[in-house]
Amino acid sequence: MACTEEAKLEHFLQWLQVNGAQFRGCKIKYCDSTKGFGIYSTNGSPEDGVLLVVPLDLAITPMRVLQDPLIGAECRAMFEEGEVDDRFLMILFLIVERLRKNSSWKPYLDMLPTTFGNPVWFTDDELLELRGTTLYRATELRKKDLMSVYEDKVKELVKKLLVLDGDSESEVCFEDFLWANSIFWSRALNLPLPHSYVFPQIQEDVGTTCPVDKNSEGSTSHSYSEEPINEIDGKRFEAHGNDCKVSGVTSTSKQEETVWVEGLLPGIDFCNHDLKAVATWEVDGTGSITQIPLSMYLISALQSPLPVDKEVSISYGNKGNEELLYLYGFVVDNNPDDYLMIHYPGEAIQNISFSDFKGQLLVAQKAAMRCLLPKNLLDHGFFPTGSSTCKANNTSEADDRICNFSWSGHRKTPSYLSKLVFPEDFLTALRTIAMKDEEVLKVSAMLEELVGSEGERQPSETEIRTAVWEACGDSGALQLLVDLLQKKMMDLEESSGTEDSDSELLENACVIGNAEQQTSKEANNLVQQKLMSRNRWRSMVYRRGQKELTRLFLKEAEHALQLSLSEGN
Image 1: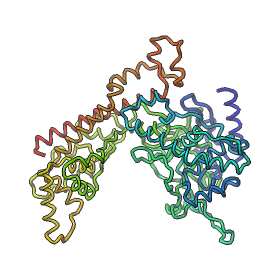
Image 2: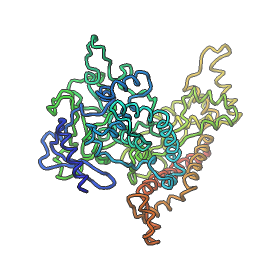
Image 3: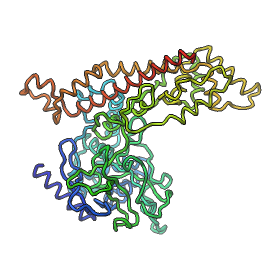
């Protein structure tokens, strides 16, 4: 590590300790160029397993921004007017503190990365490696949205806030906003804070207001948001290990007394991810565990003491490479938590027969137009892979379907039901969309029987699903599913070739630090063909995983289709 990096680290450690943080069995040190800094165990791990304690007052939260002596009043006015939301407040705060010449947060900000591996930081050439994937389009839209927010809001607001510090010369640029946005989304914690900490008793005669909207109890208003793709919540530290249990708030705390607030906590946010995490973090509201009230602490998850100089990793949750790359800028090769997203384009419904009636049926059945297919579903299909450690259970969903085969006894319960890995809500949508004209008329007639001539009642969701099943069975839905998966594979292979070609490229790859090195004219031609930036490597790992999952789920769908046709379904 260079001397400047060592000096930054030393300055940061002093800053943490001055602000009340305590290192009890760990240290922060440089890992490597891919991870940056991380937390490592030291000699003499404490008996209680507590490795690091950081006061919550050191967290960057919406409350912290609104109470800031310099920009708090201005931010509060913008917040109350609905001009900014809580997430945007923190991003603004990071930009302003980065540009301020005498920021008290400088020791922390100097330690943070300046570039990232998530796709919004990719070069144009690197982004092309994602063509055909869900991430490619999502990244294009995200970059466009970020630029729009920067031009429409960020430039003016940051300039206004800097003037409050007497700085009318500093200029904010798009890279400052991109940096702050990436810092927030890659390092934010979802903090379970005691209600009394978030909403302290306020004297009415003082005339102050609560730091966050009481009606939302710390939730986000989403006027500015980076919604993770596939509608999966992407808070980095939301999961403690492999679950989402909250412990250590206080020993007597009730769930309703806990308020979840997003924020950055210097020190603990240097923990890196590992599927086999050795630590978790918890909040100590009373100080009964750490002797520091209102603090967050890092605690070993192992039964035995940590070996000296072992990296103290945590789990960011069971996330696939799509989400890991999009939010955090890294991937896990052969990720057991990978998933495939399949969707039927909503606009295409307008081009099918009986589109209005089918649209009404979709709403009434609460059918899903998209679905996530986790890798571990394959363990319970027709061709189990046996590669997943986490088992899925479709029993309840299968039971739900079995109880629906009771309309007239015309169709029997499929023999393949227990092996069908695709979500019933998605198959319900595909059945409805794929219905032939005569099947639509049959469904309409059956539902009219239920409703009665006077429209005495409305059919239930279960009754509508049963009628659709009775009319058309599974074959139409499964054929449409096969078509969607084949189209998915064509899109993935169109620009980058097959899964095997990706595997060959990855096997022969010589990964280098950045795209500039990749264009070195001094490199040998043969070697040059094998050189790739780390961003290209990440993209290939992700897209190869997508091709593998598409191939395996397509095999499942094709087999299910054959069985449904043979059984008359």
